Length: 311
Ligand SMILES: Nc1nc2c(ncn2[C@@H]2O[C@H](COP(=O)(O)OP(=O)(O)OP(=O)(O)O)[C@@H](O)[C@H]2O)c(=O)[nH]1
Ligand SMILES: [Mg+2]
Ligand SMILES: [Zn+2]
Image (cartoon, rainbow, N blue to C red):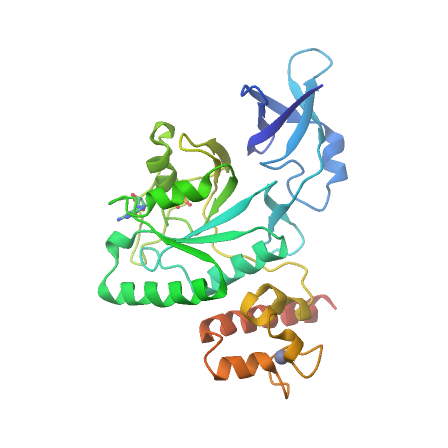
């Protein structure tokens, strides 16, 4: 029995990297599909697995998945029946965003942060393409940076064109497995290419009036970085559905609200219109950013709509 880590998963084939850095293409045993029926992908990138040669001694098959330290699920808001695990055994997630070309909605950032928080995975926010920012964009960048740093997130600014901020990113990636995620076209693959030029990952120009990405990366893959650490390049995502949260739970993953919860008059306060709500008071006096509170309400509304459909 051999042990390795899944570094790429493309439907029926899995690339498994052994402890001595060999890459072995494997299939999976049917029983693994049955055990993990709720997810669309039973074996995921980041998994430590056991594999063996099949009976006729040709192909290798993954026979077991070792327990996961953590994983992050992405659920499309449109399809709640199937869960898709993005990756497992992560040390952190790096959400790559931009104020322009393409503009990342704050709702997307906040949903991502809530999801990472719910899985207890530290998140780092990187604003890329700063070489393209107009004065107005820079004002927006600094407003958002103030908000997220104020909450306690690490925020970096990068340009893969001028290389500004790249050394800081490298040092944040040391000795860790990092999931790199974000909308299509924000520059995920380009960022990896400047850190590890030998990889020569495919990148794609933006297209159309709205300057959207064109979904160039189609499969997630783990790469070793010459400067230290491992990173997962992943396909761009449009939205991040929120999983099986209770409405009461959501504020726990907004760190600036979490610290106030004990001061709300009602312990089941949803911070919408309840009297004696400490979150609403903090919103009033500017301690909580309106954009963050809007994201919170958006998530609560989405969970309410769901309950109506599925009750
Ligand atoms: N000006 C500028 N362009 C950049 C920067 N980073 C990436 N780009 C460009 O943005 C476009 C998209 O880059 P990709 O690396 O393919 O984006 P991606 O996030 O990997 O996109 P998907 O694989 O589709 O999810 C390419 O044309 C890059 O050259 C940057 O810092 N500044
Ligand atoms: Mg890409
Ligand atoms: Zn409240």
